[in-house]
Image 1 (cartoon, rainbow, N blue to C red):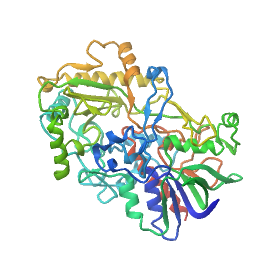
Image 2: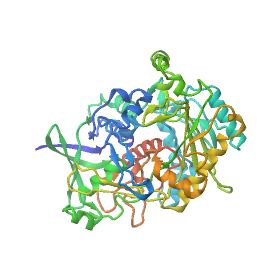
Image 3: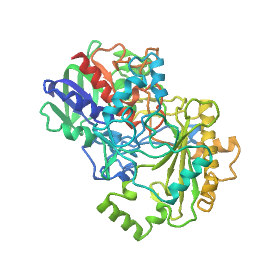
Image 4: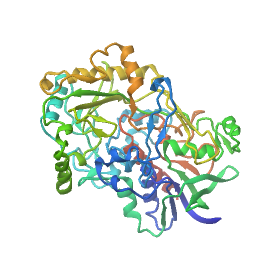
Length: 529
């Protein structure tokens, strides 16, 4: 067995782990090992629209699925997670959303010192390089280059105008002072290329002699000396290896794999682990609990006006034209984030901030292929889901995927906000500005009107927006897994730094907050050195 020694071992080279490894290795006196279970890269990851080719590709995606539940109409829901350096930042829709100030102030109010909006804003600014917005809120020279999509035209203008007709103002920077309103989507895309953390954090650090990046190296267990984590066991090229950490091990394997690795290593619910024959190192009941995600119906409208959607623009020779536009100008369909237009809305009066989002995709698709019929896909979901699920191992074998149970719509507020978002979307799509542009509602269809009918349709058709969080939540209550320094309760030398530590969902896409968590973890670790 090969055994090596490092100062810090980071498990997972995804959104948080790549940022963490970059910052830790900036000090040449520290030796860092970064382990990634997935491969080093994939050609489709470079092209923004490549996410459609990676979302169900086992070469780049772990292809997890949830268990069948009543809330999903007995379906297994896809849970894509990146299987590359850069993790899910290498396969996601590149939508860049920090969330609302209230999200992080809520974390602080739960007792997590140092996680208020005032605390995390400088970290968000450190992450990005963005030309718009105000200096008070936006970063200008960070690793992730953030841009607005190069999209315009009568369809976008009409939707924005329809938004104004139903009370939404245009917001040029929803990552600035306020999230409210309708806006073009900010994206981690620059020069027509995806800005993953592999590209923006790892590539600049590869030449550092003190950083060892190892892909295709799945970690199988954490190693302990009593209650102190002293290293990891991993597999590479068919060989079992051990690496010891002089200082700390940091789990950045993500919301699915971080709790899985804790449980495989004997940290979690004692009776569950004993039943699987896993020796218990430390009983910690919150491991794998508190799973949250955005459960989102995909509503659809026909667009009879010709030439406005990519169903028309990319049909036949139009697809060749789109390829040429990307090749020579880095514009068009291939350069787009997942949904280039969005609105943050309030589904009822009296709210201090938006509680739902509506996103527009300028085409209809079946799976990830464009339909022949022209139309719009309109996604809506609650921003702060309260329905709680779980992720747990069902075997002591690291190769067996864990069991994922979302328990969607179990919280009454999630059902109410889902319905409110759908009705708001219908009102906006029926606004005068879209008359003559948008035709009939194809899904769920105008005949689906009552609350019970709509919720039944959601259960049968909704998907997630691929934002799982919370399974190693931060806090001081009995179900918390890490403290506000991201140290695992009851264990020395071990932290978790990824989306799994989020106590609650942030108001929007979770990639930017995940990178922030990696950056903040690095700051916390360096404070002790």
